[in-house]
Image 1 (cartoon, helix red, strand yellow):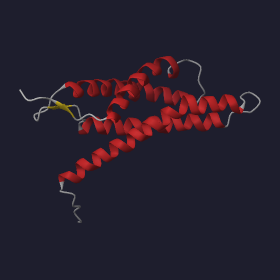
Image 2: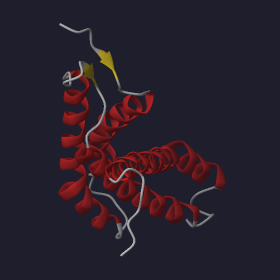
Image 3: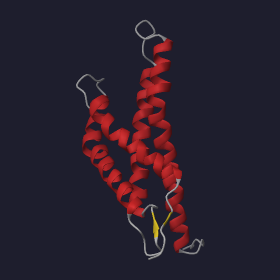
Length: 157
């Protein structure tokens, strides 16, 4: 039997940790009853798309990291996983950016700049930056796969 090597990179481990935390935080932070009005739409998106997607992505990252391929390597990502992560990342970054924008404009009498700064940079910013970075990473992976299919040549019709 050939020795297995891993093709999983450090970003995949970061995404696995992100989705593990994200899955739990949906129940503890986001899916609670006291929310701004616009957040009801975000809650629906989390229940209908993000929660099932995070579960599926966690399973795929965990499973694909252990299963050896025909070449004896383990890890890596599939086109389906990359596409799901791309869509998830864009949706998560956009909804988080909306929350950052809303928090930025809260009234100064109720929320001081120090409180808003804590919320924006410590709570929301990681949930914006990591999904945005993941989206860009998955986009480049998918683009590389698509460019590889036609040998890097684009066809003009």
